[in-house]
Image 1 (cartoon, helix red, strand yellow):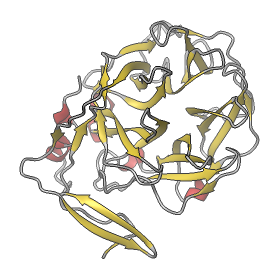
Image 2: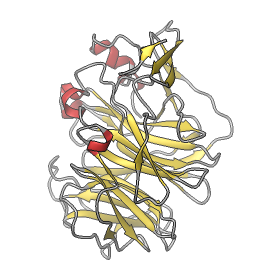
Image 3: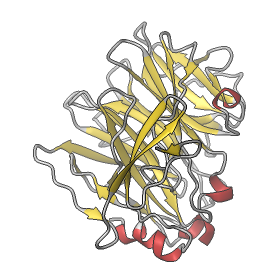
Image 4: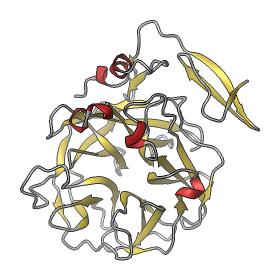
Length: 366
């Protein structure tokens, strides 16, 4: 289990520049199983433990045409660049799919997969590169072809780099894409507060042509720490659930990072709740860290979910079972009281709740 003191409270204690105490609440909507590794170095033919040669990272999960649970991921193993692992028993056992066909024509750095169903009944995978978001299509989830052009560019988002895109269909039939901002990741996420990263969004009717939304979906009002690699799914209540990870301690060196997966929920896909930490993690092979990052969730037919995450170049998985009664336990500074302020930017209005709340960048307190 992840030591909750290392997330939020410990970050404030070791980083005096943080002035707004962070409150992280553990998710209790699911009972989480003990996680296990499902993509390992042995599985990918890697014989040495080397951070530069991951067995698998940045996975995107889905249920393929045959009803199998499947993930796409980036690897440096015996299958060059991209791979797919498959489970025919709901996630109990996994193997590399040797029949997986990844298309040519994409940049080597394309990755951070997220997969959704297409309007025609096939599958579309979204991935990022240094220009923006590209996409691939497949009729069965095994053989993929490249869609021409870019779905969204970083220039249209007004950022320097994006870290992937999760897509979900809205109640009106349109699609919404959620995109993280990786521009300040290694430069400021570990050592500078506030970072004020945001998760942006775009909308589409056909998954090919996208319009960037004017405002962001999740920003510094929920936490000043970096919110990275958003994926999204619709849970059994019909809520749009965004899953992402937060890294702490980057300034202390890779071997001492602390990463956790988080949920944020929305009824309309636009306004999201405060974040909840998913209490799941595994120990790193490189010492110092027990955690989870690059998180993705797949909803199964029986309403359980599969949480996929990366750590130390391997991919782990935990099973989440819905619980009927929920309770929350917060990790926060003792005696901290929340207040709400109203922030405006032109015709846009946001309410920000927290301890010593501050308006997001570009907004003014009303």
